[in-house]
Image (cartoon, rainbow, N blue to C red; front, side, top):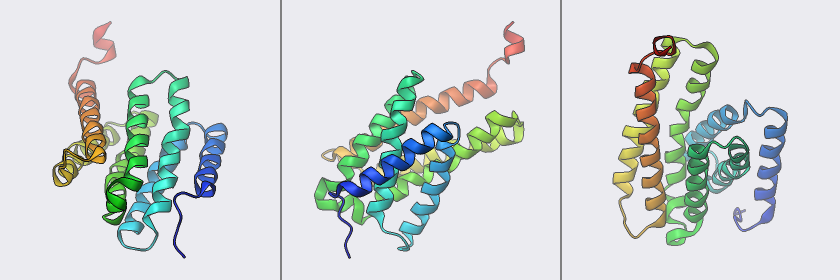
Length: 190
C-alpha cells in the first residue's frame, strides 16, 4: 500500500503528537525530535521505513514548535523553523517527488545528531560535552550540510535555495558557538 502525503490524517496525527509533547514536556521536545528523526532517517536511508511519513513527522515538529519559538521570541530559531517548514513542504512535490526518491530529507536530518549534545552541555556545563557539541555541530551543520548543498546544487530548485538558507543560518550559529568558547567568560566581563 502506498502512502498518500495528501491525506490529512498523517499530518494531523503528527501535529497532535508534537502539540501534546510541547504541552507536557516543552524542554524535551527538541531532543525527542532529534533522536527519533536521526534514527528514522537512518532507517529510511536503509529502506527499513518509508521516507514520506518520516518527512511528515519531522515537518510537523517544525510547524508545531515554530509557535513555541514565536512565544519565546527566539527569532533565529523562528527563521530556522520557517526555512525548514517551507523547504520540507516543497520537497514533497518539487520535481515530481525527486527529493523524496533520493531521500534528501533523511540525509539532511542527520544533522540533528548534534542537538542532544547541546542540551546535555547546557544542563551540565561540562567542558567535554561542550567540546563534543561544538565539534559535532561544525562537522554536521557546516561541513556535512555544506557537502549536501554543493551536491544538490541547482539554482532552479526551491528546495536547494531553502537548503542553502539553512546552511547559511547554521554558519551564524557556528560564529556564536566559537564566540562562546573563545570569548571572555561572564566573570571576566564584570
